[in-house]
Each structure stands twice: as C-alpha cells, then as structure tokens.
Length: 192
Image (cartoon, rainbow, N blue to C red; front, side, top):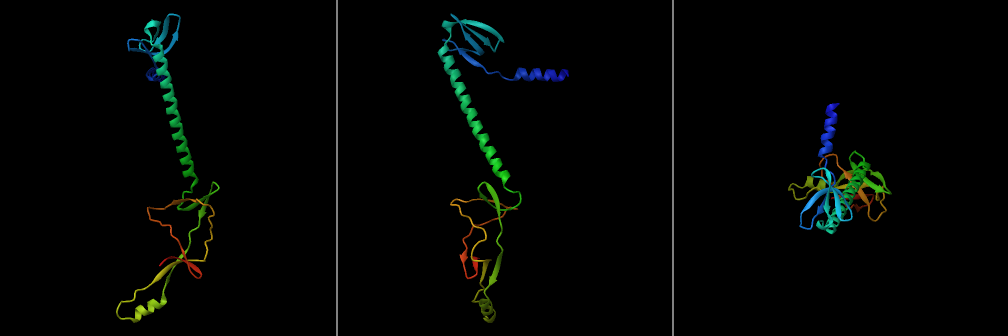
C-alpha cells in the first residue's frame, strides 16, 4: 500500500504542469503556472519556488507574456488538430483493412460492400496441325503453338463503375497481372 502511494506521489511530482513565461522588461522571465494582474502589481505562482509571489507591474512585459501564451496555445491547438487528423486517417485505414477478408483472392468494392470475384478457369489449347507438322518434319523448323483461353465470350461478373476499386490479397509473394482478353469464337484468349 505504501509503495503504491509513494509511486503515485513520485509520478505526480514528475508530471510537468503547464507553465507560462512571465516576461520582464529587462528580457528575463519567470516560469509560472498562473498570474493575476492587480492595480500596481502582478501576483504569480512560481513553479520554481512553488509559492505565490508579487512583482511591480512596471517591471513586467505583459504584452509579450500574453502574446507568447496565445502563440503557444495556437501551436498546441494546431498540433492537436494534426494528431487528430493522423489518428482519423489511421482509423479509416484500419477499418478498410479489416473489411477485406483474410483469405487470398481478388475483391471488388461495390456500394461499401466487399464482393469476392470468382477466379476464371483457364485451359491450354494446343494447335493440332502445328503439332502434326512438327512431328512429321525431321528438321525442327516448325515450333508448337498453344493458347491459354477462358470459356465464354463474356465474363460472368460485370463491373459497371467508371473507377472500380479492387483489393488483391495474395497467399504468398507472387506476381499477378491484369490482362485484356481477346475475343475468339466461343472463348476469350488470355495469352498465345
């Protein structure tokens, strides 16, 4: 119990209070917590001595004291606004990350809802005529030819927005590409 009280007292003594500089006309200043302007005196609480003191008003530069206190307050407000803006951006980013599913895949955002885009099934089609020609020709002049295709002439999933928003989460460090498909008779060609 005694240790807890001693620890609280040490913490309270070490926490800095908001200090103000009470400037004097000779250019020096006193570190104070608060002050009161009286008729011919300024009464202030000295943070150095921990007691109330008084000084003649003609020795104090009140205009500079008020100006600096105002500047410190404005800087403090500006700093607090910047910190609030940073925290708001971080919260928004965390919300954005949390709304994407954990599993790997491609996701599309439509009206603040995340939709999973199904993976297209591809197949490799070999050109039979070239394969026969390659087998018949004794000299390897004719190379084989294959295409990677996707069934259907149109995609099952349509994106109608001008500026679509996609998220791609990979299972491991791997490459991906966005490609334009070339229409064919009953399929779309990914790559030749």
